[in-house]
Amino acid sequence: MKLKIKLDEARELLTGEDYDYPKYTTQLMNLANQNAQATRPRNVGQLSDLIQEFKGNKLEEWDEWYLEKYPDTIDEATDKVFKMLKNLEKSIAQIDEKMIRKWVRELIIVKTFSGLKFQETILLKLSEKYELPYRLSKPEDESKGIDGYIGVSHNAK
Image (cartoon, rainbow, N blue to C red; front, side, top):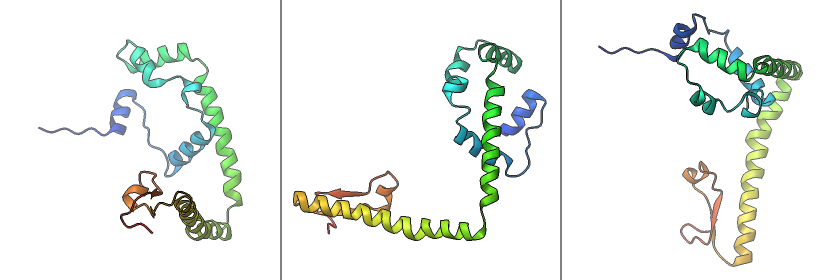
């Protein structure tokens, strides 16, 4: 017999609490947390190390153990995320369709052109300086953060 338990279901079984949030709220809280850096190790401890250090087996024991070491962390992180969410809320209120169109156009047209042409300009300059051929990277290289190659004769410009 095969049994599958979803992570959310496991959390609910462990805690007896429903961790179901309204649509998009966790994405917004995650964005606010990323910007506020509220749950970074310098603020909450290195959790992957702390959970190894913890000798208990029950969620309640972990809760007690962790909060003994970091008694104000949950409140401090909550405050940082909440303040950042309020900042985001003010920013969202300033966004209109005209601003979105400007941003989308900049992303697709301006940043693509300037970014890719700037990369090619740098490659061309280096190519001339060192008298070596160059070529722009292929999509599989771009996904690795490689913009181009100097001294490569295959498909060189």
